[in-house]
Image (cartoon, rainbow, N blue to C red; front, side, top):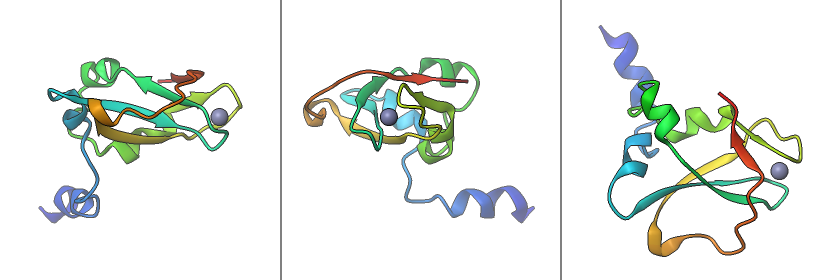
Length: 92
Ligand SMILES: [Zn+2]
């Protein structure tokens, strides 16, 4: 019984993907190389991943610099990062 729940509890403070789809929220990816891009969460929502902590989806992103993991952040639209460069894609 505890198996699934304890696993989720460890990510208690991490935003879930569903939060990025709420009004005035958005999902952003920031790579170590300095690239920043808006990420459309709809492909992941379609895969039934809405309840996943965004942290678990970071390894599904690819950056043109070759990074295989890109940090994801859920932010309000007013907090959109400056200097959006693109170059970060959903890999799967
Ligand atoms: Zn990069």
